[in-house]
Image 1 (cartoon, helix red, strand yellow):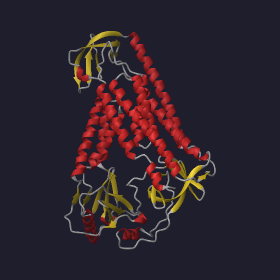
Image 2 (tube, one colour):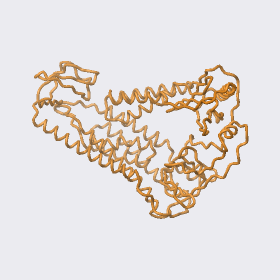
Image 3 (cartoon, helix red, strand yellow):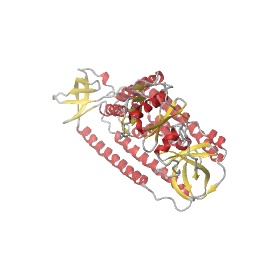
Image 4 (cartoon, helix red, strand yellow):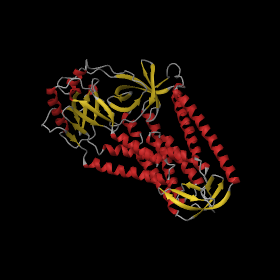
Length: 533
């Protein structure tokens, strides 16, 4: 394998996750701001069923690109660009999504060529996988259920549409009067027979109390004439379900196709780097990571007990002799995003996807990253390590982004992806306004994105430093957490001093506890705003 050529051939990650996703956001902004045609009785805003189905590739594009489905995401971006040219009369939207579609086409062609180069650089060894492909599992059941769900949503759309057409056929046109505007988006009108009805028009700011509004009335059924009732979101929901089922079926087909003939294979070293995650290395070079559904048990325990691990982690004892890492045969599509099978002693133990190596995929345990930290100068307890100015500035920007997403949803409630982006911004922002570490007399509190860990000093094995980050090992199983970049370069020494001070007093029987971080509740509150406001 030509490792350098294989790595250099890959399309940089930022091209898709920053360039194309950022381009999608810019295109959406220009398309939304350029489509301001008012809804009138002469030209009502009639729901478009075809465009509602086109919303599926629109929303799928950024989600697929962010999740690493590059070719599928580019295909969806290109498809929506074409559909927008055909279905949307807005010149701004046509230009914006047309340019984005062109960028998707260029990146897709680049990705196809890059994958071919990676395939060539991976060598020429071919193998045929043993036995038969694994039986179709839960993904097939999920795909079938999604198809059934999509079919039912299409049926529901047809039933509701027929009901609306029957009301329209029997309805009479009357002039209603705006009598109240609630919460800036709900317009209440009163009909000549004193009946009142509430609407949520596309441009509620254009209505004033006393304005006449033409409506269609059939008994208690009342609808605006210039904005007919839009139930095409059923089509969007059903189309999304069918699309997801196709994605699952295609992934299952790619996995089973590994057994259809000889596939390229390489023998690599496998290093477990987390629960069900394995780092693949070739002659000391990091190649890729794979995630499996179960722990394959590829690495034997190196330590007799937790106490030995703690002594080694703190640098008080030499590490045990490191065993040679297990070698696995990785066969399949040899490029980033490719489907592969892992073989040990001739048997297929798992199938997975080749993913890029991220900085967080550090190999610990026997490799003992960084340097051990010893106790330093005393510190007054309790003591907290707060984020630096840069992280707080990032938090402000993220909060502004979440607020902007919430405002945009007021005008475009069908774009749920903006709500998902806003939730992520809130989760990331809150962690930038709370301590990164907190030391007290009995424990150290570690704040992560989702969880808050309280580790009694007796359960903390030690601290190792790798650049501006600290790695804390704790608990009966030697769990390791890596902190973000800490602005206080003496945080490790202070932490070890507090640990040494506390161990003198001895607090037996305390256990490591974990609870949800406040950021999760903030994200849930934001999601509630998105759904109910």
